[in-house]
Length: 319
Image (cartoon, rainbow, N blue to C red; front, top):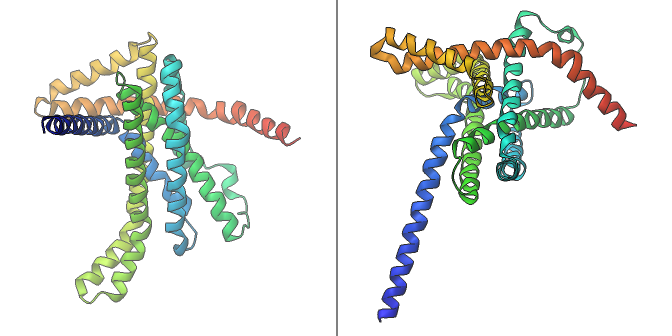
């Protein structure tokens, strides 16, 4: 009897330990996940454009295909790669983060530059592709974009859980990968089907106010999507800029980070009632302005150096 009680005590202790570890993983995942919010917003903002102009019946299947690709990116490719880098070459993490941050700055600045000076290829005749080919092309493009953003998410999350064991870090990254993918693509699915839901309400609603609500959804969705796109672009510049600035500081070039912190702290003193909010907002704006400047500087580099090199690589690979 005493042996059975001892066994039960051991089982209870192991259960408590497992529960504590699960709680710890969940807490670390939540903490690290908040660090990635800017990239998450951008991830959710860029995806709907890949669904534009395709049949409504194909929207949700495409979202599911992109979500599966995103999970594969995060769990099969990026998670092991991040853990390997952290274990064998941790010094690489900061430079890789900075490269990803610079890419985010470039993407955000390119979107703004595109509005100011439309590209020459905007006026070219659209390609005539069958629906199935166009869908495959759009899904592949969305998954490729997701890979870059997912790499940033996993790298930022890994940096936030520094100091834990490899197994715990893997569990935290897996929780973040699954949770963020579900959040992003669940939100995308709701966004792309919101106008269909509004149209259904406006046509078949039994009450006048439900029909009016449906019409309001239909009319308001273009503005909502435009607002999300603006927020996503701003988030790109803010997150990318802050990553590069912090990376420079870790390499011994902390002057810019210290200057931004000083300006933000000084602004917070002017508004003591909302000091924390003001300090964060000023820092985010300054990080974003730096990100915009860096991104604009990278546009000609991408156009005249990286793009020709990539094109020549594709040609040589084809031969």
